[in-house]
Length: 267
Image (cartoon, rainbow, N blue to C red):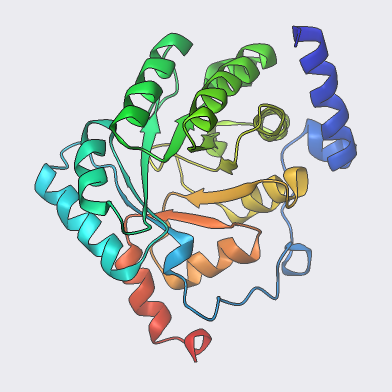
């Protein structure tokens, strides 16, 4: 697609998805009655399958990743999310478990050139990654270079889907104004990505229910929504699900599970 075609299609999708003021200003703050899923209730088999058990600390060791994967297997989390250099370890530890091997691309700033992100993605897939959480080029998105963002995401999506893997597009919402947030969601959708993800967990702030609700308003039920960053309690987890999230990324997965098991929602 040409730059003009991408820009026009993005504008049209945004226009159809949102009120004009939401697309061109800061995102409005929804009240409880405006949340997409105010009656959300946990699945009968629990919430572990909604959580990516995450370890993205820069000093994470192989021993730490082995422990993370053991926890992910035991509790049946959706995925174990680790740095690219630990993908082979995670694949070995999770083989046959049904837990996805998730890694990050262009992390945490998204400022790598596209060929570097593609090489990183290709290597991760070869090592056994089944989900790629890629950071968009945030500067390009903010300045309105929609063709660059779209084409980069599309190239990684095509590569991943060809290997049977999924792609989550990290927008780092705390760095974007309302218009850029909407454009990011639209471009991820146009590029064929599987999820929009709120945050890296290394930005100015983490997931916010307002942003999750905005993503839901733009992409509806057509893609997954992953909320990540600062989600450490079951109460915060529930806030994100009520706002429209379908997956949660958290390093505090065990604590969230424990709090859930003692909450009224588990009874």
